Image (tube, rainbow, N blue to C red; front, side, top):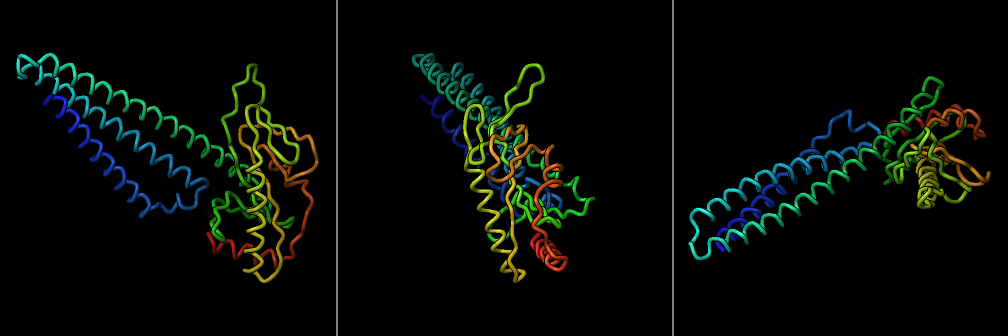
Length: 282
């Protein structure tokens, strides 16, 4: 039983060591964020993806270290264990080691999938940001990952037509369609209808965030400011079946949306005040 006990103790030491290392790295990343990262779209998602990526590396390193320990314990048990219990002890150590390696592999695969999901969501956020940034030469003021009033707003657009909160939802990854078809989500003004699920939470949250931003701006500039909500859905083309509800668009439709949207014009003075206050919040 000694080899098995050594194997389990060694595994415990490795787990404690790599968890401590991971916590220290995460704490350092939070204390010293890069200036560019602090202003980039989807920075929180990217930070989560980087933390998971580091956990993947730590799991891999820990697995290799455990594998070396496992091989050493088995070899020592087979060579130097008591003759009467050598075979049984080696078999128990082998079974325990294989079980722990299997659990480690499952965790590694889970972390890999989680990182891929974070990167997909971050890619969607960046795609929307790029589509909005194309409006800047037209006089639009854009703010990405803006923290105001206790909220983290994905995108805020300020122009003569009004103030807009643009929230991004990637949801489940779009299916791969044969023949180059486009993945489509139906929108009836109340709910997004994906092939395998529905989503009304994103619409409610976008509207609520627009209302919260309107309240915050009203307090900051001393005048009522209407804020409208928009939802962008990267990877999905939107089939609208009703004229009701807030705008929901694919990133490629952002330019057309703001070109034709009904204006709620701001005066030059109010527009300047809103932009100035949002710039201070960055």
